[in-house]
Structure formats: structure tokens, C-alpha cells
Length: 198
Image (tube, rainbow, N blue to C red; front, top):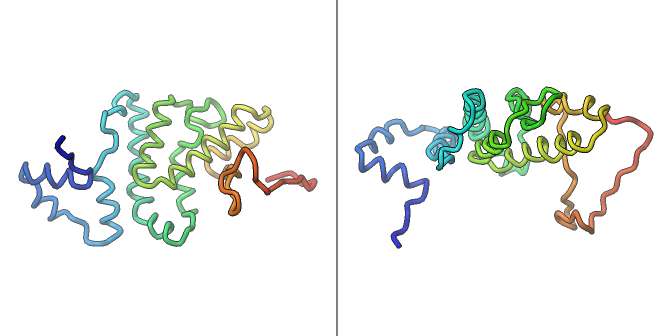
């Protein structure tokens, strides 16, 4: 079986066959950050064109998510990875996308299809898996738990602000000495001290 080109080399190989290689080199970014952003744009990621199955409104939303990932996340994320820090400066722009809790109905959520929700994740993960994980935990594990299991009071209190990313949800799972031992071994506990959370 003949080996297939990697996605990183695919554009170069197809470009050289069609005469576009010189044009690609002329448009090459001049800075490292711009190079990272440009290289992440080379491969669409939706190899089977599944996004074409979404409505025009959802397709436009996916375009917004792609631009956010390429223009806001890609230029800075490697610096944060290197420092083992989270880019909190992106949370406001993330909230403005309106994608948190996308498949849920009400509470400011979009009520989008599972397909659109999955494609949102694809667009985020195409650029950076940590931002996709943040979205999955905030939107899925945290908001989803409240949406599916919370009381009406809890839903009204938390979901609208979480949808706007004014409040961030988390899922306590990993500890330094245990790893992600949800079944047993976690040492962290919680105790209500009489004050309500804000």
C-alpha cells in the first residue's frame, strides 16, 4: 500500500502539482504566531463535509467558532501550554460566541442539534484540544449536569450566566496523587460552611 501524505504536507504536494506553491510561499506569514495560525488553517478537519448538513444559521455559527479558534486561540495557546496556564483572557470572547450549552433548550441556550454541537467541538479541537476540553467540561459536564439533574431554581440561577460564560463550570476529577480516579481514591471532599455559592 502506498503511504498517504500527512495533512501538513498535503497542501504542499497538491499545490506543487497545480502550480500554486510559489503563491503559497509568497503569502507565508512572517511571524511565529502568524505561522501557527496559518498552519492550523491549512486542513479543514471536516473531511466528509458534514457541516453542509447543518442549517445556514448553524453553518454561520460554525464559521464564527472557526474564526475565534484561528484568530484568538491559535496565536497565543502555545505560550499558555508552555507555562501550564489557562488563557482566561479568552473567556469573554468564548462567551460572546453563545455556544455554551448549545444543545440545551431555554435559559439562553441555542437548542442546537447534536450534530451542530459536535461540529462546534470539532472546530475548537482542530486548533487546540485544551480549549475544546474547557468547552466540553463547561458546556457538557457542568451545564449538562445542571440541565439534566438540577432543580428549576438551580437551572434558573446557573444556566443563563454559564451560557454567557460569566460563571464557569468545572468538574473535579483529577488529583496529583490519584489521577482521574472517579471510581475510588479521590481524597478531596467538600463541606458546606453555611454561605451560598455566588
